[in-house]
Image 1 (spheres, one colour):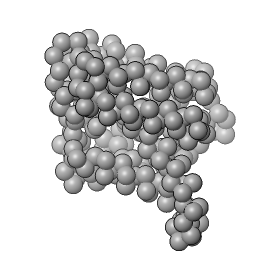
Image 2: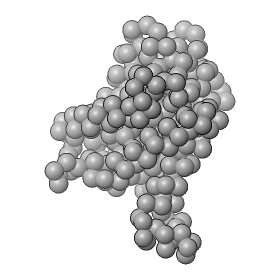
Image 3: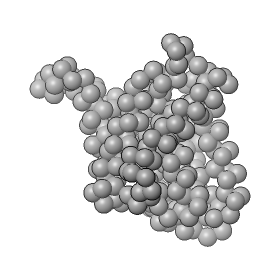
Image 4: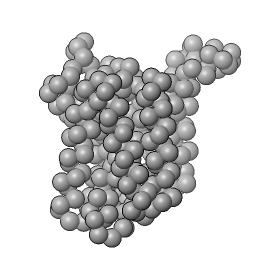
Length: 241
């Protein structure tokens, strides 16, 4: 993988973080960027994989429009204050990087890559597509997180319609997060072995707990992006999808 792959990878990460500090307009623009990225993947790399993730990006935009996004609801808060601008940018980057370290150690030292899978067509395309592949693979982190964060809010709305589940939710308070985390891990079952599915479950639970805290959803997005990049930049052969 040429070192030049770091240029679009880094630029995309910094742009997404910056837009994450700009409120609803910035959040919407970042979702449009994600849609464009995977429409690009559909056209020049893999129609099936790119098309699938383009549909997921449309789903995220729908969640965006109807207000089903944790990032919009919470923002990034530290020491009781909502941070925007440079303070928010660096806060999200720092907390996200720390979260990356924790997630990569969930699988045990040296074993993170062994439980992670990848859409191979995104990893081994020739030419400029291969140069851009780590950016696409890393961007899956933002896209998947936002989609499944949206599901947390969907499940939260549906729970009120189910008396028994509503009772459990009233007692424990985490049912939407648990449902979305299970959905996230099952989503990865097509790519992962059972150990990988369990890793995905733990990773998403951790990112979701951060997302529903005052820190908001953006640090988890950064962590997922960085985690994918750490695996895809060297060889693009083992990345969380």
